[in-house]
Length: 232
Length: 232
DNA sequence: GCGACTTTGTGAACGTTTGCACGAGCGACC
DNA sequence: GGTCGCTCGTGCAAACGTTCACAAAGTCGC
Ligand SMILES: NC(=O)c1ccc[n+]([C@@H]2O[C@H](COP(=O)([O-])OP(=O)(O)OC[C@H]3O[C@@H](n4cnc5c(N)ncnc54)[C@H](O)[C@@H]3O)[C@@H](O)[C@H]2O)c1
Ligand SMILES: NC(=O)c1ccc[n+]([C@@H]2O[C@H](COP(=O)([O-])OP(=O)(O)OC[C@H]3O[C@@H](n4cnc5c(N)ncnc54)[C@H](O)[C@@H]3O)[C@@H](O)[C@H]2O)c1
Image (cartoon, rainbow over all chains, first blue to last red; front, side):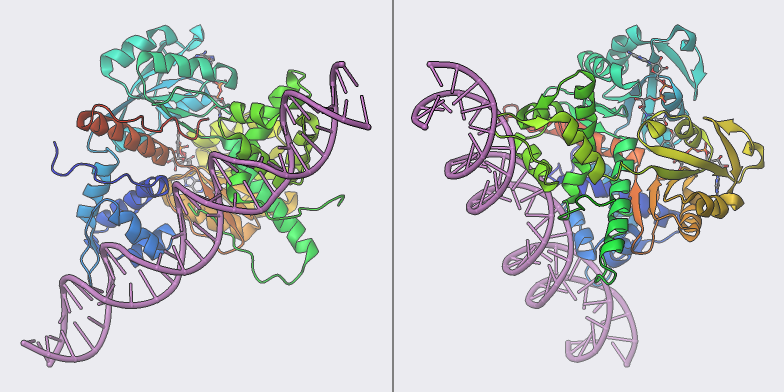
């Protein structure tokens, strides 16, 4: 496949927003909306309309002036750019509370991600079936990754085991890692690591909370603080 | 309390890194490391040393030239800045897979967050005890939030119910929301909303995966792509 | 076919974040 | 007390990201 290949490099900030546009556009498709303006999409995503246009322009995706964007075509474009025209195979390391919740999560298969295995070292968890996937021993990881050509690994182990899990994933051939453990895992260049850390999120929230409190107690009549952030 | 109050406004990018420094510094404390240089901390956090120094300087936290930073004092400073010298009360809306995993998660109480309630509308889930917290009916939300002075709400409902959950939280008096549902929830100015979306993370990963593939198939000898991102 | 209207695509201005480079301060040792 | 080596704090420039503002390109009604 190669009608037109990834032209420019897309800025990180834009890449992080494309999935959100995609989700909103899919909702529009379900409501049989065939066309959408940058302004409408911007409202849905709670961002600036110029940003939407610029983001979309990176994909070379063309709207029609005076009209807007064809929703279906836009969905196609974004999916292609994000690599969602492939199917991605993933493994989960750690079959505890979080690992099990993830295994059972419908959001994976919905979007073209197939869970090829869930791994743990706890004997008592082995062979349990969670979310339709049997828990296997961590020692089988390399084999499954190689055999099924898995490229994404999810770490759902306790913090102490996360770096080891990452090492094993990388050694097995995984090139992208999503880490839920609250530690910084290091990886060689060429491996993409992203961290999702609940406590970091909470601490950012409490920073703003605290700020609100002290701001309120200090000056009573401030112009109007910008808030309602990176809305979700 | 007001020994010295929040001086300047701290940049968002810095606020997002402070929790990570904090986590690393706490680990250092456990290892009885009393002092740390910006360079060492930078290595642990996988960022640039100048960035670490600048980040810390926003707090007015002073290191000692030629020596480094006192770990304990730095921990104190960051905690204060993030509002972790208060205890924050939170509620969780949605007691499904994710809500239950969150309720049972040790990471909350560890860091000064107290779960004051878990709420659902599914009769069959009411009064179950998950993670030491009894599941209550959503109709009790306002009462609990008011009575316990809850400021943070976590949304773990299906996507369709998330906006309603947010509305109820806000009406009840919550001012910060952490949303796990894959939708954009809108909130009035003055409410901080953060979104944690698994599928967004995966799509960002697959974008990079896809990029690696097409880059490899196009030019064989590129200088060396920067990767190994926002390491965790 | 023309004018009124709409909405895109993008240059340019502006704001934020990063990273370098270096002066200044501190400790240690002579 | 002087010198040396280390590490902080920060001015500055470059990179990155956002927003404005407007010409260009389209639709639509007549
Ligand atoms: N539970 C949550 O809601 C939640 C939320 C955010 C983050 N987290 C983080 O996610 C991670 C997992 O949380 P959890 O609640 O599922 O913990 P858990 O203790 O329930 O599960 C951890 C699992 O990992 C397994 N494990 C331990 N060492 C392993 C290794 N070396 N290789 C493979 N598996 C190993 C354990 O046997 C266990 O099954 C933790 O780092 C936690 O901080 C959890
Ligand atoms: N399970 C995961 O691993 C996972 C991962 C990432 C994101 N998510 C997202 O988190 C959310 C919850 O996921 P889940 O797997 O726990 O789903 P779930 O279906 O297991 O749980 C949802 C719960 O919300 C309750 N609920 C429904 N409507 C409600 C309402 N109006 N008010 C209060 N409660 C209501 C339901 O009764 C149910 O108990 C979803 O939006 C999902 O996309 C889940």
